[in-house]
Image 1 (cartoon, rainbow, N blue to C red):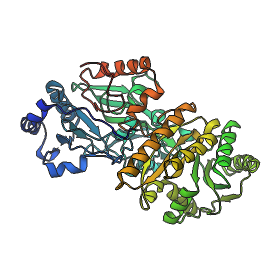
Image 2 (cartoon, helix red, strand yellow):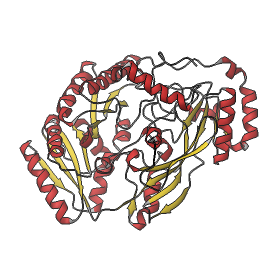
Image 3 (cartoon, helix red, strand yellow):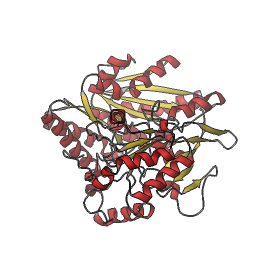
Image 4 (cartoon, rainbow, N blue to C red):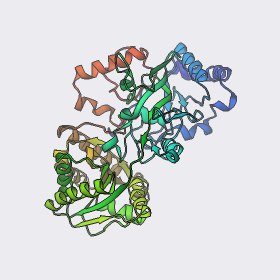
Length: 479
């Protein structure tokens, strides 16, 4: 993240043709599928990364594949930048538009087209919410595994763009591990299909390339996702430790022992207090750090796995071990964790970081994160997916104080660099967007970035798709 994130300079030739562009788009779309009045554009000026705002040129809300194709073909012909948008829950500025860009939102393409339990998959449009898939197949004993905290609102199209994860992805993997196929509209309006109901496609792994590409290679309009049978049982357990370092070391040893629970979530003391005040989940308040460890399987399998985990936790000085006793108690435990970001927003403005580190470095990075934030005179609450080292420090500050806002962004910069220097990477599930774009050089060499940009340009030579995102603005190929 940069204290002065820049956008590409709006092209005046496009701005001067705004009225003509809108008139042309109204020939391609029904009137209620194009938003162009300035006051109606305000909801689309930012996403969940609310530090930056830009009013787009207009917003297209297509209802069909043909409409998406026609709009992209038009934009390609006349050089109009395009910003794909799902539900706007991006935490890295991935859906923030620019003044000369057309936003293409997929909210009206929100149907579950097919549920195929024989092949254990579902075909859905990009605007379907993450949770809606599990709700649709739950009565038949199945679920869709990736479960970001925003799963009630976030959409599959956005999940694919950012390769989203969630608490239960320790065992089941992130979006790319649960994606079988996509229907993609390329920048020139061409519609292609990658993958399908089969497990592995021949040739280059273009599906893997698209997942996590942040809307720069095309617009996903349909997805075929993997469905998983519900486990026989599941049991979350709370482990309380005196310090964050002890909890971090315990996580590393659990995974190092070859034990893979379905989830290992971490909260430090500030996060515990914030979430407990909101959810009344029964979190212990007399500990410095908390792990939510969920195991699943038969009763015997869960008992055996928990016994092994408890033994490891004892070696790290665990103070409290609390098993949930009912489905209601389990739901409350997860309500507290899933509500962490919203609960934090009740008490302060915050920036949510998203770096990933090797588990062996978890204790060190936690300690240094606390030191970095305190060095800027701010507070931090840590709540994250500990099992795969995907950290989410929440840096608390006052957004109405420009000095504090600048310090929060600077602290975020240092934390992301720390993650990379510790052998990790800039993002685990939120993506790069504009937030981390200017830090890409800290992780990648010039040769690395040039190769990535060459692949991007092969799909979109004019760099019209989500053009301000992911890659540093300097050093891009001349268009």
